[in-house]
Each structure stands twice: as C-alpha cells, then as structure tokens.
Image (cartoon, rainbow, N blue to C red; front, side, top):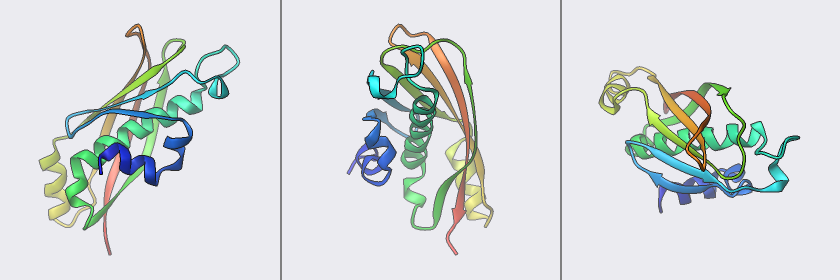
Length: 145
C-alpha cells in the first residue's frame, strides 16, 4: 500500500476533497486538489479550509514517508499549524511539503526517549506556478506507552 493509499484509507477528509497524491517520498510530498465548485469560496477559488486540508495532508504524507518505519513505536501527531494566504488561488492547486529537520536527528531524539518535534514546510501553488499560500506544520512523534 502506498502512502497516498494509506492516507486516503485512514483520513476520510482526504477522500472527501478528492486529493491526488502525486509524489510521497521522505524528501517531499506533492498533493493536488482538483478544481471543485462544491469547495469554492465567495470569489470562485478553493475555500481556505480546503487549502488548509490540502497542505496539512501533504505534511502528513511526508511524515509517513519519512517516519513510517517508526510507527511501531511512535504515533505522528500534528502539534500546531500556521498558514499564510499570499495570492488568490483559482483552479487546480498543488501543495508541496518538505521536512524542516533531518530524519536522523528526529529519530535520534526518539531513540533517546524524547518526544521530538519537527517542522514541515508546505507551499501551495496554482497551475501557473504562483505560490498562493505557505504553511508550516509542527509535528511530533509521540512514543507509544
């Protein structure tokens, strides 16, 4: 099962928004949200909540890709998120997520019995390449009790 298939199966909101998992590696995750009138805002573009979900889902995809081998001993949880809407988004939008800390550093903290936190940075773009939003999600790996 791919990361995208796993998230689509376990996170109903990803299915609701028809998110497409284009790339899910430990280096980056790229998700696309099709243009869907049911999820438009008052100016005809994707609703801010839909873009938040797209970006947060991209962050979750890279976390699973990067730390999937740790799931037997820790649960990934989003701690906080901040998003900035930069330009009007219209049509299809794509979110690209990258890790803000080296995987080895995060795993070393987990090995030391700590609860590591790490940022995931996400850029949201229109089809013309313009960045319409930027999000940072801070994640943690909560050790299993």
